[in-house]
Length: 174
Image (tube, rainbow, N blue to C red; front, side):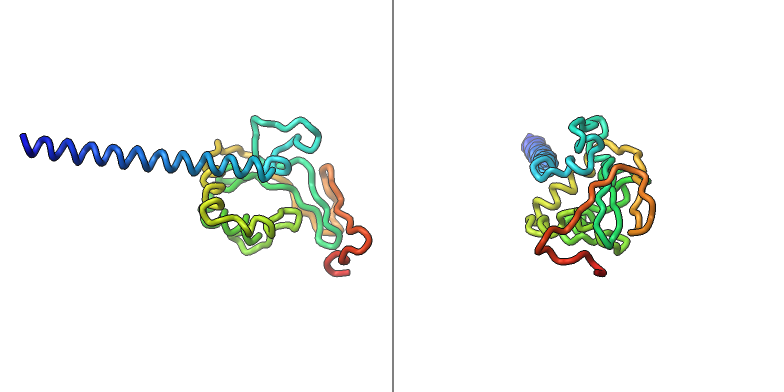
């Protein structure tokens, strides 16, 4: 009887630990969802947002408005869902954290300056990991995003042009 009580106690402790781990994981995803929402990620990375009709069925599956940065080119907000071919499906959580906090992609390229990674560098490691956990929890959406386009290439979508105002530094290469 004593062995059975001890075994039930250990099994109960294991169940509580498993439940607590699942609750922490859910809490991390919930935190990530909250941060992605208040940081406005969907404003650029969800089609229709700039025209006032976001396509919530394809939340964070890539934008439909490009940003032109004089001297650098034109860039479309990428698919952030975990689709293996067109999104972040092959990126690890650490690679997502690195991209959003330093602007460096796993392939070594630097994100366009319209992506505010300089601001996101202030995220805590736990908040950045929560964002990665949330993005990895989304349903994968296959959505290939065109671009980027070089400064002299013809763009095939609606473009927001970023123009330096008076007193602003000149665009790169000028």
